[in-house]
Length: 169
Image 1: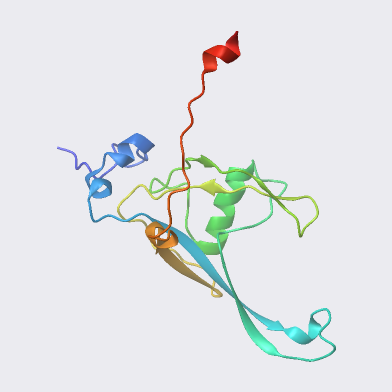
Image 2: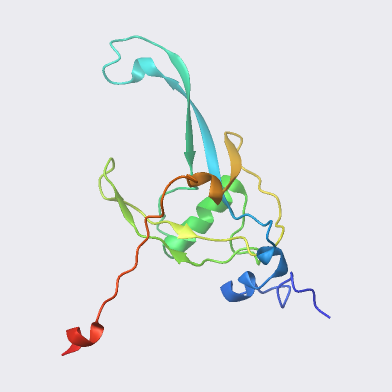
């Protein structure tokens, strides 16, 4: 008998529906998490515009997701996301432990000419996966999604009823 927590085949990932039917996912104590990266960059502020030659050595910390430019050999945005995640984190999103569930809305980066941010979502669909191997200047932070929502805030979701039949006439 096959364990319900494992994909049907060692080489296949579960479908999204199969994933949500797994016991470890439905466990009441299971908490979804999102992976943030912390990049540390040493900055010499004397090089910054309007610094008037004053030099202050500080460390800036940036929290982000894997990011990079599409290269000519990339087959598309999803491939670029997978390549960048492998290069930055050592996480192979093509493995059975992950599935691509789609692309989020693209955003224009206003600080860079003709740059478009194309985010993709890859949930981990196995209870464990090979460990990440990030570049030395990057730390990984698995953050519970619930910690990103204020418990006191009212939901900003609403529903609307639309009479589509009247639009078709």
